[in-house]
Amino acid sequence: MDQAQAIFFAFQVWCNIGAIIALVFLTIGIDRIDEDAQGAYVFRLLLIPGILLVWPLVLWRWFILETKRDVWKNRHQPPRHAHFWVAIIFAITIPAVIIIGLSVRQTWPTNFEPQKLSLLQEQSQ
Image: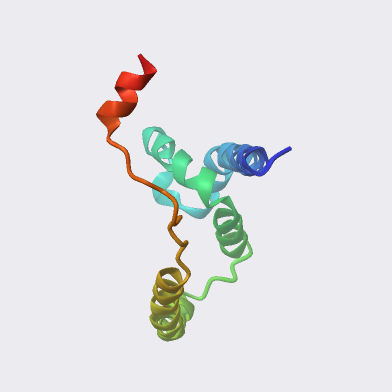
């Protein structure tokens, strides 16, 4: 199995798990944690692509809401607290990636001569 097949297989497994989670969450779970979603069946279809991709977050959030561990006043505190450090990391890594990408260039072959495309097409005919 080459690398592309392994990545595609991992993507298939991820989406299959997400499909199972979406099926269970949209039939059972959403009614239990959100009373506004009761009877909104067309709305649930719109959630399927998102659940396929971020199903671990859906499971985590479902667990937090089912066990009543959600503290409303602290709901957005952890992401806001992390924003400062994420901004610092991005401010360092993005220029570093650009500088490394520009400094690690491939060398152009010295014995290479450019050819016109029209000449190549005439030779092939």
